[in-house]
Amino acid sequence: MKAILQRVKKAEVEIENKTYSAIQEGILILFGVEKNDTSDMIDFFVNKVLNLRIFEDENEKMNLSIKDIKGEILVVSQFTLASDCKKGLRPSFDNAMEPKSAKEYYEIFVSKLKESNLTVKTGIFGAMMNVSLINNGPVTFILEKK
Image (cartoon, rainbow, N blue to C red):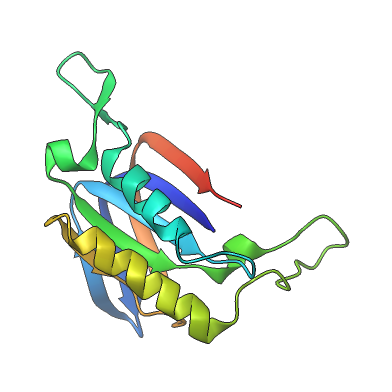
């Protein structure tokens, strides 16, 4: 399981030339699931997303979490995070979980984030999406659990 967390001033998902979801200050999460991932890994990711201190306090130190600032979260499914680019020039996606199970994991992840009572928005699993953001920093983190 992998996630890219980007601290944003705002982010938006556009599908078929229409805004589907948009957030203000918070985190854009690109979320990917791999073949050998298990559902118990989701809790690790939810805990990290909600409690990782990546927002600045009054002293400009990263001491605040998304919960502390009552920020918003936008989650976008991204199977390409499971890619392997070690050989050749064409990425292999053999390690990506099959779509039906990956969608279930994605939905559980989103559901657990929503339990925080923060604003949590999404794209559409498997859809072709245009994602735009204003990265705040830039500040980007990679979360990975095998």
